[in-house]
Image (cartoon, rainbow, N blue to C red; front, side):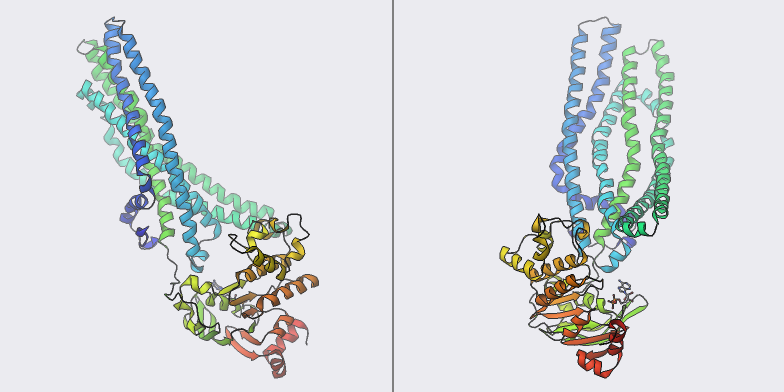
Length: 588
Ligand code: ADP
């Protein structure tokens, strides 16, 4: 997919929009070219059957009905039946071929989109909440799916039908044909405006659909809070407003989409009248045969459906292009965090922050942060909420980059490493260890790569075995959506087991603030000790026992280090730390 280095969406003009089908072809459709080619040929065959059908009416009328030649019934009937057999066969095969192309493209596109989204960073996720991204991965890929069938059947079957039917018409009488299409220029201007309207409105509709998905995502993740606070009607009301808006837009748009086929109806009606006036008179005067007229009239009638479908295609095409544009917008978004080049892991694991500055927009978060976490030791980050402690983790793992200063690991700036190598140095255990709706085993060992013995040791060390032994399914018990089948302490222990198994040299630990019962807390604490032994550990500490056990305590306030030392040293100083301990833990 070499073509993805294009400029971001907001810089894209209409010429680039016009380039999207080409990119789609290069990125996704090319492998299916043979299948699409076969489908196209079959469509052409199917399309031309209509012309043959209308052509056959001439001998039917002139020889059989008017001429009285009974034997012609059989061969004309045989050919007509054969035509329908061909249509039936091509229909099934092309449907199967096109569906396989459609589905194949959807699989690759959805997988690529998710994969690409996973490489992007914080600023992207802030602008695009999960619901909106789900809508892009599912809704937009689906919206462009229909276009294969419509377009290939449009280009193949319908265009061929039209061309061949008009061929028949012209062969019978060019003047009648001219009379039939006399109203066609009436279509040009409305088609242009309808296309423009649909393009604009589709984009708004897609945005509205993203809003719906985002709202659903938020509501469904907040069910407990909504119910406890009695916000059910309020939330349903807000949801209803969004879906109502969507309904109004969809209704308007579908009326607009029907406008072109409707105009085609009117133009065709005019054409029929024209032909009747011109041809009907000639037949009654005996200048042309009834067969000529019936054949022509049938060709015109049969041209009507494909023409209508092609007219509808314009709207469908605009809608699909809008979704395609939204899909490529995501593909064209690049991570702002650039990977370094160094693939060798660092020699040591000492973590150093040197005068690090970082702001989110206008808001300064770190203001000259400087500290060192020695290799093999445990360093506790302590301070009020909002002091910038989590940001330290984000800088180390390069979820964000600093505006100024240096962050080094083993003496090497973190920005020098490739992102996979850098992130491979850390095990991260956060407050709410992200669990997935898979079994506990899969949550601890994603991809089943671990040696069973190592897994067993991790499960024991993290005190996971303490509760899984009592479960009938053991480690194969599902964790529930987002780990909801487990208690807070259990979830943390699963996270710790995962980190033990990962066995990285540096451990980043965000201790849970949520209260655990005393027994759980003891188990989590024991599991953490097991995990941090011998590793360079940086811990956002909330519990006095953890803080006291640390080799160094770094006290942060408003993005700076205000004090550092051991518990005893800091208590003796009687500064910020001593105050914090008295405030949070009721003295020492
Ligand atoms: P702590 O972990 O000490 O509670 P954080 O490092 O999480 O503090 O956050 C420090 C400050 O940075 C907070 O004021 C927070 O609002 C702000 N902040 C953190 N992440 C973002 C973000 N992605 N966008 C904007 N502000 C952020």
